[in-house]
Each structure stands twice: as C-alpha cells, then as structure tokens.
Image 1 (cartoon, rainbow, N blue to C red):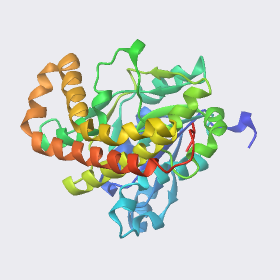
Image 2 (image 1 turned 135 degrees about the vertical axis):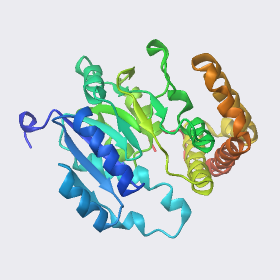
Image 3 (image 1 turned 60 degrees about the horizontal axis):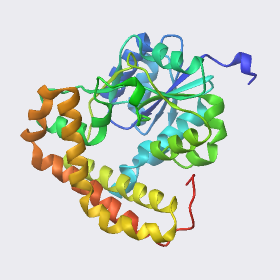
Image 4 (image 1 turned 180 degrees about the vertical axis):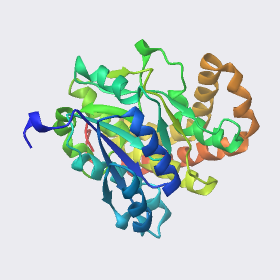
Length: 310
C-alpha cells in the first residue's frame, strides 16, 4: 500500500475479555476514534465475533489458537501476542493500541495523534478505574495502572502503557524485531526511546478500564509478567550485576506498595482508603509479581550478554 493511500490512523484492540466488554469498547470508539481503521485481534468464540461483525465497522482478526491453551501461563500472556497480530494487520500512518476492557472518551484518538504530529514519539494517556465502588477492582487497578492515575505531570512522565498508547507506523517498523513475537510494553518502549522516540503524555486521551481477572488469573498474569521482566532486565546488564537482582527481588512487593501509596497520596489522596480496604489482595498480586521477578532474575543469570532488544 502506498503511503498516500494509508488511513490517518488505525486502532488495534487486543480482545480477550468478553463479547460484552468488546462491544462496549467498540461503541466508545465510534465517537472517540471517528474515521479510523479499527482492527480487532481476538480470541473470542466465532459466534461472538460474528454478532459483533454485524454491528460494528471493524476488521476482525480471529485467533482461535489463543483460546485453546490449557496452561494458565499461556492464557495470561495472550494479550501480547494479540497486539502483535493486530499491529501486523493495521494499515494506518498512526497505530493506536487499546484493550477490550477499556472504553475511551470523545477526544481520545485526536489527542494521541496531536502528540505525534510534531515528532516521532510514544504517545499515551491516563487510565481510570471503571469500577470505583469495587474494592477488588481497585486491587487490580493499583497493581496494573497506578502509574497512570490522573492527574499526571506531563513534563515528568516516565512510563506509559500499551493499554493506551499510539505510535507512528515508521517508528514501530524500525523496531519490528522487538515486537514480532509479542508486543511487551517495556521492551518495545525501551527500543523506541533508544531510537529517539520520547514519551509524550496526552491528558485528553484517557481510558476507563474494567479488568476481567479473578484473583487467580490476575496473580498468574502478574507472575508471568514479573518473570519476563526479570529475564529482560538481567539481559541488559553485565553478569556481575545480575547477581544483585536475585536478592533484590525479595524487596520488590514492598517497594511497589510504597510507590502505589505515594502515587495515591500525591495525586488523589481521597483514594488511599481503597488501598487499605483490600490490602491482602493487593499484597497477593504484588507478591505474585515479585515472585516472578525472582524467578526471572535466576533465569537471567544464564542469559546471553547485555541486549537492548529481547
């Protein structure tokens, strides 16, 4: 496809939650991403996809292999592979990423694209908890998205998530080897930053998330993420320094809890009771991540030398 024939933007939705969640997400995109190409990479049942295809103007990339895993670890990492399938199929000059448990506001895509017009960058917005009255939902939210709790200081943003982010196509093409097997946020973003793409925050590009995890699936998801991160971090450092990551992983849950508490106190102090209300669940999730980092750090001891990719 010639560059002039490409749509202005593609929105890639990684879909693994439910027909109802995906329907709500696509409905919000009718206003929040008007005129964009919508690409849905999904492992939902074919009957659900057929019903949604009749209702929404979107391209559906069906990935039935991602719904057939008996291993919990594979189930809870499928979102990264779904992202890759969607990005590969997208045709837009800008590619925005979203997940089906998120709904967007009317300014969402315009705000992301505005950040990318001036320069190649990683553009992203805040994430809100869509179930503010649910204490368990807060435990999940704090573990996954505390760093994206609004309001953020646009001049000091040090982290953005691919659950709500956009990129120029040529930027992603330049680091294709990093995301070809799975679009893992930190790895892709590290490679993009190294290539000259800064983080740019779009306050008007907020989303609301209703994560579909149970305690068990959430813990597995975080454990596998911790394992991946532990190995990845080790590979980026000399062998002598890797030894330090193993004992340091024991402190990770407490460090993360402190960060979450500080974030809530600084940005939205009225939300601090939500941390205390379900502290055992929150600690369970944080210890799952910490255990993953510990295992990943051990595996990383035998990894190849420093790398900035995978």
